[in-house]
Image (cartoon, rainbow, N blue to C red; front, side, top):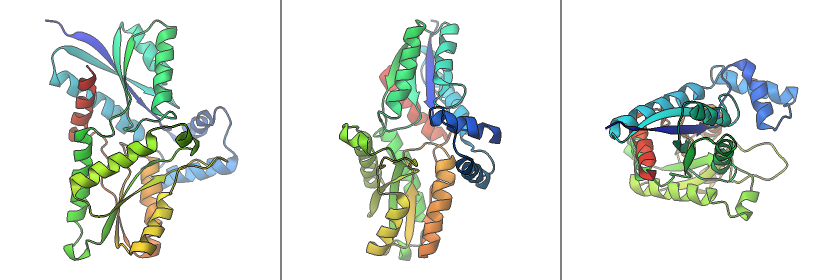
Amino acid sequence: MARKKIGLLVMAYGTPNKPEDIEPYYTHIRHGRRPSDEELEDLKNRYESIGGVSPLARITNEQASSLEESLNARQNQYEFKAYLGLKHISPFIEDAVKAMKKDGIEQAVALVLAPHYSTFSVKSYMERAQQTAEEIAGPKIVPIESWYDEPGFIQWWAKRVQEEFRAIPESEHDAVVIFSAHSLPEKIIAYGDPYPNQLQETAKLIAEAAKVPHFAVGWQSAGQTRDPWIGPDVQDLTRDLFKEKGYKHFIYCPVGFVAEHLEVLYDNDFECKVVCDELGVQYHRPPMPNADPEFIHVLTDVVLKVL
């Protein structure tokens, strides 16, 4: 029996592919307003500090292709074909939906490579995909809105946290785990956005699964706007926890992200480490999921459940 063809719309934020992309990429994020020369210089310096470009583009492609392969190996009812759609750089979400239409795809599952739902993130991705599909009479899209409490996702992180603890001498198990995600403007809380509560739940579930005695939830990578953003910032949180509890080891788990990229490699591995060095404490950060086969297995479960 022939498999039914189905689209796999994998959506992500995107990243500059080369230094020349930095200006147009951030201009798109800022709704057409070019960053100032000073802001651009700061951004270029950040990318330079992590090797010139972020590995995110490569990793996102690996995640999409690995997920397609895994889905086709795990069942024989559907033949999945992955299409990558990015929020702020080509191929854009609209490009991916048009490509599915061109290929004759009539049904698709849409997954955002971010576990927590927010009106600012996942909702906006899904709306762009659905709107394009309606405009061009494209495929029927089945959205996956969140997977922050997926058992396999919780176990994946719990294992990495336990590995970090095993690397710390037992006599120094005075450690705290800081779970974090990308901050968003505080106004989303007034609108009843579930994003902050979902991060809290993820943190609680991972801490329970890993038997973590001390943990806290922080926020990172806040935008530079007039509006206040959700806090506490992970750097401030680190200082406060050291002052109040005197922890000697800080384990950072940016569970709102699924790959090594600027926000992790710079905001965590540089900025948070600088704070740890100032305080004379040890910085730890487990590897990110990237295209780890166990993590791809988790995403496969997430997609198959909606079908």
